[in-house]
Amino acid sequence: FLFVDVDDFREVNDTLGHFAGDEILIEISRRIRRCLRATDIAARLSSDEFAVLQEGVCGEDDAVATAQRVHKEMSEPFMTSVQATPINISASIGIALEGAGGTTAVELLRNANIAMRKAKQKREGGAVVVFDESIKTASFEKLDIERELRRALDNQEFDMCYQPIFSLTSGQLVAIEALIRWRHPDRGVIPANAFVATADRIGLIGDIDRWVFDQACSAMQNLDVDGSNPLDLHLNLLPSRLADLRTAQELDDAIGKSGINPRRVILEISESAAMNAIQKSRTAFNAYKSVGVRLALDDFGTGYSSLTYLNRFPVEVIKIHRLFISGITELLGEADLARAIVTLGASLNMSVIAQGVERRDQLSQLRQMGCPFAQGTYLSEPLFLPELEQLMHTPDTISYLGSRVSTLS
Image (cartoon, rainbow, N blue to C red):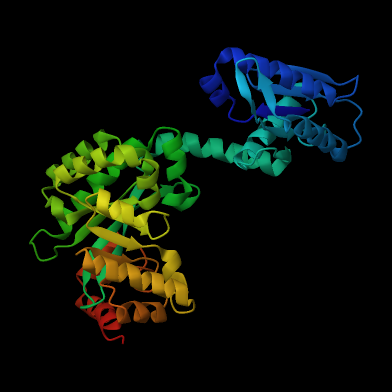
């Protein structure tokens, strides 16, 4: 079986209209037929999906050769009666062979569909993927994670940990970055980057964000009952949540319930998120500012117009991307970029935080260039709340970390 899916066909319908879209689909059908033998069967499954059944092929190479012929036909521009300019169309193709995880027509079509979706994930026009059991396993694991994520909030499987941020002048602990973890009953502790994108895609990220806001703000209040530990709290925000004004209200509610000073809350927004939502971000940023929180540009320095955001948005904190820190002692260019960001931050009266500090020599270099704050595994791994409380109430530990930072030259 070959499963052929036209890439981004919805954009054709939205741009040229359904009449032109129908003309292109008819032409696609003709081109697919030209690639097949007389005994092969082709069918249209849905608006932009086609299937081809081939019998008597000599293994994977024959099937792939057919897919390549389809791609070659598709590479020729398409013309319609309503558009004078040629239109380029591509397709993602999945292949399933009898015996490779399926024997019935239903199984083969399902497997070809799974392979096609894997091809589409490559995000390159003309991709071909042949189904195997590893693809099936990964697909089913993805579905399992989606189902389990929907239950995780109700089952109270999420937990928070906090990565300390230190002053490179005094060595003191000055802030913590809140990081969600999933305590999966079978898989153990799962970091955020392994499930947050899935939660965003299936529409759970809003519920998770509200939980994170409540937990982190409550933890801050408990850490500073007597006012002796005025740490700042860093919270991360996904691009999809940036322009949703409900997010600002939910953050305001969490801060209000905890009673902490909103100025101690720093909302981290990636530079790419600001770039991708630049028209809506200004309104959203102002909404967060009205809550009273401060704003930080995360992973600063990798975007093509980083300086633009500093002028357009009310940013008070910039975090240097860890890529610059990783090569700061070996690569002159990256050291120069990090130094330039530190200088820029000082001139604009912004706090600058270096993230991803993993070695003593990196920390020493950052202090020499005047970087005021840093975080990373060399200073401290992310800590769950009991561990963080123990750290904060163990003067010898804080003194040790502080001296390790402040005595570097």
